[in-house]
Image (tube, rainbow, N blue to C red; front, side, top):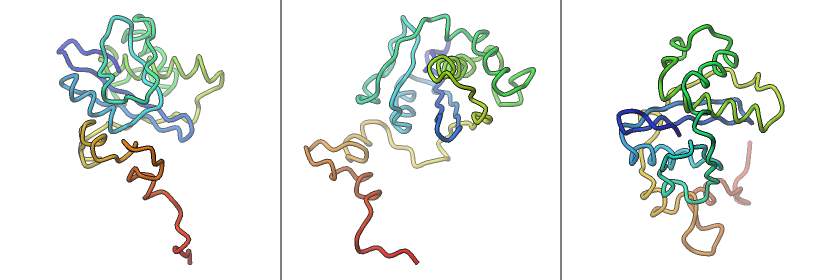
Amino acid sequence: IAPAPDGGAAVAAADVATGEAWIGRAESMERAGDILGRLNPAEVLFPEGFDPPKWACPTAFWNVRPAWTFDPSYGAGHLRRQFRVAVLDGLGFADDSPETAALGAAVAYLRETQKTALEHLADVRRLSDADAVPLDAASIRNLEIVESASEDPAAPILAVVTEPSANFAAV
């Protein structure tokens, strides 16, 4: 998550296993928190000196990184190399945007920690409310979709939906 000059933030996400990457822009910190809550990441990167909406992902590891790693020009260089482009406009965001700062910081961090080429990370999709039924972080928590308030690990809706059933037969 990278702060935007207008008081909002850019949110970027990458899934190393699938090679998927997403980018989105929120007009407020509350909205940025809602986006993070919907993504439910295991780890969130943010620049030092920035107060992110940690309430949105209470189980995530919040990793503070040097502020310069969120500089758009630093991120643009990493993104141009990653996606093999001269300019980022074709991906849907400008070289000097908060989106570039957020996704660039994520790609740089992945290169640093994964110690491997990220060739399968080859496309960026824009996060949009049209992609899902928007639920804010408080609703996700209160509806116990991902994590249960009780001690029962099978209680969250997600656990029930993804649990294989002995009564289900594949044809």
